[in-house]
Length: 114
Length: 111
Image 1: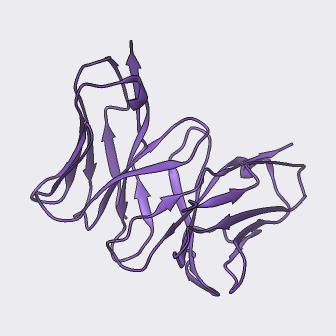
Image 2: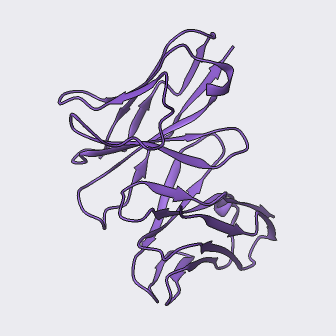
């Protein structure tokens, strides 16, 4: 079984451009989570989605960031008009349904802003 | 909000030695996860603990959750170079699905 697949692994953008990060959950998983790991900081929750629904976006910055998990296709984390401070590793996790289901993580996308 | 404190922040041990990493929560833990992260890679799920007093083992790694469900420990027996990495504890935050993580413990194994 394939694990959580994230692409691209590395993404370089210039300030003001848009960044799109993709995440395909593990087979059978319908819950997707996005986390951000800033340099020298811990892993922070951003958003939790199920198919076509945002369940919890309490960790998302108020502006420029959006996430979706459409009925078909991967989950997308979109960052508009990127700034230097957006440089970080972005991790996606997925889980099955139930409170006893662990979250499994992808290898992350390293975003660098020039 | 819930906070997790890991200790030590970094640890250097000789190959073959035992070691313990601790994770202390500011609130009662409803689900405690241990992950391992290698530099530049994602998090590898190790174990999940939910019940007070619960203990789980996988190969040479044992994780425990105390009876009061506010502290967990990860113990590695006879450490090997493959155990090197950053160990993270994560907890379910309240009734939500999101995880709150500790700052991590960087483990180095000297041959």
